[in-house]
Amino acid sequence: MATTIHPTAVVDPRAELAAGVAVGPYAVIGPQVRLGPDCSIGPHVVLDGRVRMGRGNRIFPGACIGLEPQDLKYTGDPTEVVIGDDNTIREYVTINRATTHSQQTRIGDGNLLMAYSHLGHNCALGDRIVIANGVAVAGHVVIGDRAVIGGVLGIHQFVQIGSLAMVGGMSRIERDVPPFTLVEGHPSRVRALNTIGLRRSGLTELDGGLQFADLKRCWSLLYRQELTLAKALDQLRATPLTAAAETLVAFLESSLQPGRRGPIPGAR
Image (tube, rainbow, N blue to C red; front, side, top):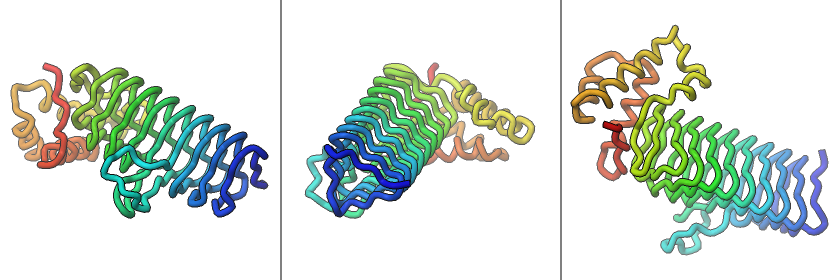
């Protein structure tokens, strides 16, 4: 398929647009932008700085991707935004490039960023994540595969959110969100396992249900017993763990290390 560019769009001749790219009215594409096949760039979209996209991404009107980070430490270093395949980035989403030389803000494949969400510098998103409307993600945040982030909330810088986690809307996320869990509140608390998300992912049926049963065992020891988190993790380490349980335990152990935000506590 041919590349199509609306006559009112401003596309630098040095930008690289693959076959099938469609650029809408009044879009602006800078000289360091590289777009893979079949990307759709909507009206009034701005792509500036070093932006690399894979194939089949849909960018809706007013989105701004690759502009300078909102970071006073930024001194003009050549940083970039790297986006995978088949992402949907809705109206007026902003995605900033990284701060320091050769660093990246990264988005994987198949993600949905709803309208007015913001992704700060140096963030790293996995695959098939849903971020709802009006979510502000600060710098250096890491979000794992298939996490769901509810609307109108803020995520503190350097927070990590595990895979298949569910964050309720309007929560305050200032610490790490463990994988497979449901977190909500102000202050936020771990409320339960994300049972619906786990069922939809097929994890509840893996190994005849053993993976899910082991997650429930871990959940009970971590959040329903009168133990410190460190002691609960020590007890779990003394037992065999399935792959899902290992992911949960390893995430929590890492979150407790110096320099990390620490995990969100459970509701008591």
